[in-house]
Length: 165
Image 1 (cartoon, rainbow, N blue to C red):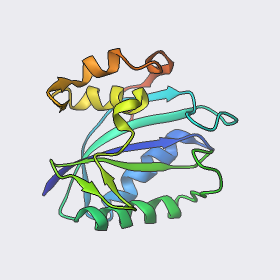
Image 2: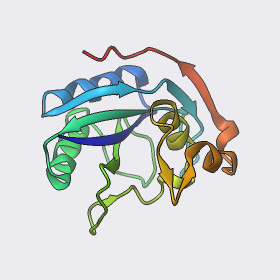
Image 3: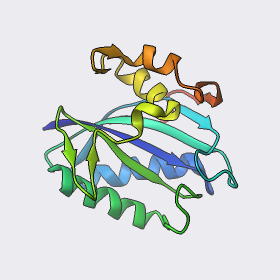
């Protein structure tokens, strides 16, 4: 089983319920949730004309290969009514594969580590909550976060929101 980190976000409808449902549906597809960060509320990045996001990061285990996991992620997003109409636009759910063990994937449809994760406080702050040991080029997450201009816009909303079974 591989350790995988997933970023989950939502800014439409019952945002927390979409996050919860995403993790439950992933668990029905050979993705075992081990640990989940607190939920943070954040301003949208990219496309600004939309509501605030709820974001969290989950550490999961799976035997699925990276592209198999991507298919499961896309299937769960579709099941939760994600529509891809505007790049970085509003969405019921967004699930990104951040890290897959120490594997590096650089395909047209999949990039691991996620190509923009190191620039996004809404990803690194919750990741740091559950995996502060992760580094990039030997540098701790906390040091990387200190330099991110959007870190002040990431507001802790709720701890212990998801029961890992």
